[in-house]
Amino acid sequence: ISWEQLPEMATARMHFAMAVDKENKKVYVAGGVDAGGGALHGAEVLNTATNEWSTLQDLPRDGDSYHGYIWAHAGAFEHGTFFVFGHTQRLSPPQKNFKARSYHPTTGRWSTESGIESYVRGRQEASILAGREGGNSGNAVGHNGKLYLLGWDNLTPQIIIYDVVTKLMSLGPSDSDGPRH
Image 1: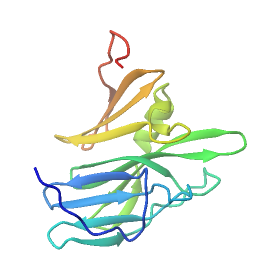
Image 2: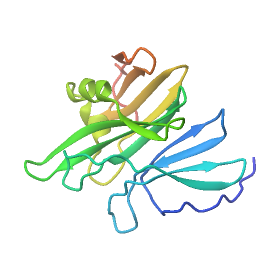
Image 3: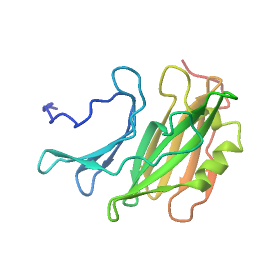
């Protein structure tokens, strides 16, 4: 295994959503925070064939948040689409709301994945992916037409499975043996 230096993103960021489009050899990033902790709403894609970053349409504004944007925590690429998961945060009353967005490279547009949002918000697992104070709390991966949203709730691993074709969701298996450290 060898490492190679890639070009810098147009916007320096940390704690962002990222996913890889293996078929087209591209790396997508969205959201995150800047060095001062401010929310970023931009998105970029690295074309690994040319080693160049391109700016994508920003994540859509969201009226459910004091800063107007989603704090993106996790990303996955599946079925030709870049999915971003995170939360918005309200100050009064204090509340975090899970959010799911999808970027469609063929159209260059973002969409709301309201089915995922409703499912997660209606369950205790909402805290898995809505984000904890001080950083990331969830991850996501795409495989065989499904997204697996992974996270923790009270030290118990949780998985939510989303079929990107049928738009159906289910709760994945849980660890009945308790938490692993």
